[in-house]
Length: 318
Length: 298
Picture 1 (cartoon, helix red, strand yellow):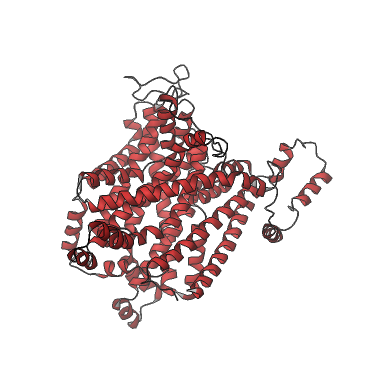
Picture 2 (cartoon, rainbow over the protein chains, first blue to last red):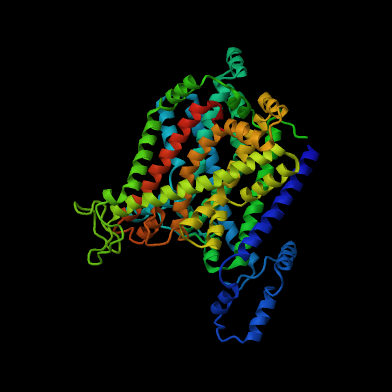
């Protein structure tokens, strides 16, 4: 187990380094002059060539690309993600303002998707062919097909403009005004969770249907165990294995979805930051955000892998 | 990655050709929802090809004196801010979705399948290099990766297709690689090698066809995902450039008039959902017909 853990961590490190290389080279291929943004943003149009050169040196843009990369990595390891060209502020400051918001949304969405997705899939499998199964299956099929940004707009229209039950967007910290924060979050969190919820329900359903047919479940029934015990101890525990392996991928989907949902609901999180920075050619921000997202995804995948070994003793990695 | 046991058994069975196909069709067409999906897809293709004949108006003709009309007999879905007929634009939007979807799947599918085939067949360092590269692509949240690539390349149909392909190539490579690892254990691969068949021959003649069935399912389902992602990109404003009618961009354009003309946003989004739903259902049907054991893995 320890050897597996060490190997897995080493692999993750390699992948994070590769991702940082990929992100860095992608941002170097962006069309346009990144310095132009800084100059126009700070109204330095009449800048002299010498001052321009000084700026180049200040942002480290005068050095060759490989050196810039090493510099960037070196600084990141020292907690410095570089300076945003647009906000003229350290990227780490920008991220630390917005990451909690996106995490708040994403974690809520992941919890909702897991709890309701697994419950719906389980019920639907246990009542196979019944009316509840039909409802869950059809809703899940729609859930994986819906464009979430469109669904968000639908909800804004229905609950925000037509019924006037909920605010139409924005974000308030739950520590400032818990009630307003919750009301603002209901629809975006639901939209963010819907795809994961639906695919979890589908996966749980098929996985549980598979497990139900197994001999040990029949044995459990013939032993006269209670249905509750059979479902929780035998069916769900085994049926959840493929569902858990998907969590890492789903977190990645949810974070990707936050780009759309934060735009629709006007939530000042990482997703919005990355979209606006992409448009603004603010490459230090895009680099920092993508790298951070990637680290989160890779780390969650490791945790999932370890959980996987822990839950299923049949799997023993080298 | 280790071969999934579900893959090993599924693709290695050899049965008489004709009855196998009949069985496939019977299972495939046994569910109404799959037939519904097929009908929608056929309708989409017909709509896309014959859009100029089906659409009641020119989707690009601006009638600036008649902007933001409510739906009526003349304009079934009303008109947008530039007085363009919404129904006609939705009909023409099907072209973008179909072209982007098909191109991205062919591009990413071909490259991904080849990479997976090479990685799985040669193993060792080749496997490590290719699959680590694929892990790298998978490590960045998909939409973020596609967004960044699209912004690097700039908008337009071709670049959107490339960006979507970069975002999805790893999926094909992973599944193909898992398939190859399982299928290459078969005796016919060994037999073929003992007869002196070259590596490319074994890969293309024996491994590729035997690994392919689950990939057909993946490609069908990816069609829906590509259409969704393209709509998402257009929604963010990095997709197809205006004035070309694309569903995602139409949702964005209509968003501003949500209070007065909600139909402008609703109609194109509904089209996206219907089409993606159809591809997902057909994908489900294909999976069940090809190998029900793939349930849960694809």
